[in-house]
Length: 422
Ligand code: AMP
Ligand code: GLY
Image (tube, rainbow, N blue to C red; front, side, top):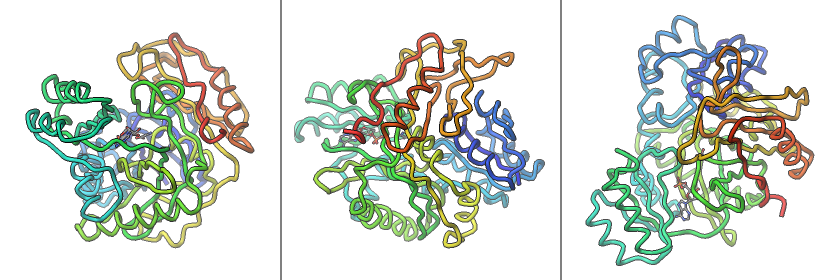
């Protein structure tokens, strides 16, 4: 079988690497992919315009693609799944309507309230004046969020009213997030510990994936600007059996049932970002896709077939799939370009040392090949991921792998996994 993966990040490298392990899979195409996918056996990068759904359809038909996995949120929110499925191409990812859970924070917050899913209190505004007036009525800190997609960067935590005014000015007046900021959500600030809960969902059936925790802030000890994620580990001890069941009962099931009653049953990876405190949980956000970098450590632990899992979900046959994990722990450390998540330089030459250790995998993200040399092309450049008998040994192996990568301006957090070890 042939598989097409849409996207170019570390998540997509991990999806392609994992798909390649299936004997039944002969070829994997990644659109557009990165240097890591280009160098992976059975994997070929293709340069279709992924916004041109007809071109993707033609490619799938000409190459007899048996499964399309859509990695990032943008094509999902734009309706790529609906289009390809309407052309009888087996596609793993939610419909445009269901992807609104990530595509609009107002949509998702209203959905949480309607279906009694625990979340922070909020209000939503379409203009500067009314949002600014609201600031007199709330407590601080508060959280100002651009409504639309902003690559994980559209969330501003404000310690006081002055900071909140600045945030609203940057969103409404400076249009810091473009169209995504034509509406804002102002939300109650929640304290606690975060966890990512990611599952494969097909209508009313769910297969939870291994638990994980991301590190969103750029600086060690979780300080500084929010990023797409600077590293992740799995499993996450904060999600014990009781919390796991609570997430299924209070968050995932009501979401799946709510979407069915709205006429948009879910298919794909469903990711709940949660805040957990004193054994209680609230949803911070939903993502309509696999997390990046959570995918990298989670897939390193997955022993059963990813391709069969996606097909079971598409074919409404989830009961037939047995998911299997290694008991080992996994840790993934993002190596980023100096300046990320703000501006950074690209085209830095990378030197790498090959590792033959099966428990270590260097996933590429913002890289490309020029004359067979790997150069940087993004803010998050690699995710050095490793397995170990416990989190501490996974962490130390991941950092050994980090040390084998060099480019001008490379930086990483040295504390990935600290909350799982403390
Ligand atoms: P979101 O994209 O909504 O998940 O927000 C990105 C990050 O901002 C989260 O992972 C949290 O670290 C932080 N955040 C978002 N909403 C809140 C909130 N209500 N209270 C505290 N932190 C938040
Ligand atoms: N790592 C967070 C995300 O994928 O949105």
